[in-house]
View 1 (tube, rainbow, N blue to C red):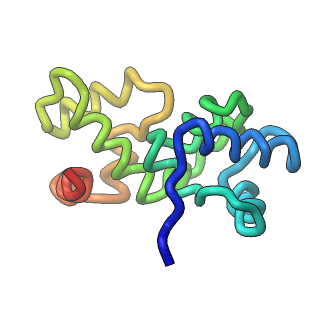
View 2 (cartoon, one colour):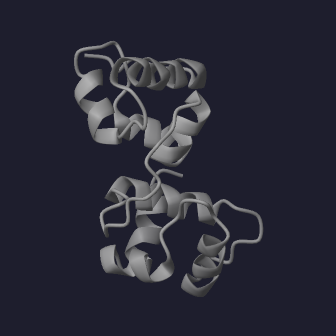
View 3 (cartoon, rainbow, N blue to C red):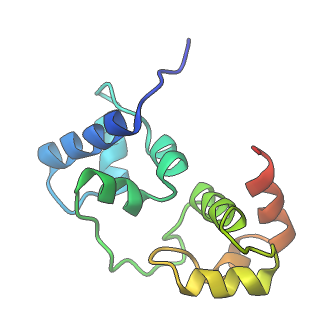
Length: 132
């Protein structure tokens, strides 16, 4: 079975449709349950395309709950995508210290300490560059 291809606009429209059906703020878990019965992309695809769940919702004009503070705020896929975004950013050196400084300036990126709770730096860098 071939995986459907979605434009950014189609992805954002799917998130907006879920929010209209489920209400806001929209969580990735609520969207995931909703999209299984719809012709909509998975949360993983949205995160890969837009960099984070919050960014996917922002593109769709949908509110998210920004007060969550658990150590699992970001999925493994989120963390890898965020590190990939860092590595692709202008001036990135690829060092852990540089990532930590970069993360402080972002609206939705795990701190260096949070990232290290999930992955060794070398491993997350390897995963983040595997697709390039």
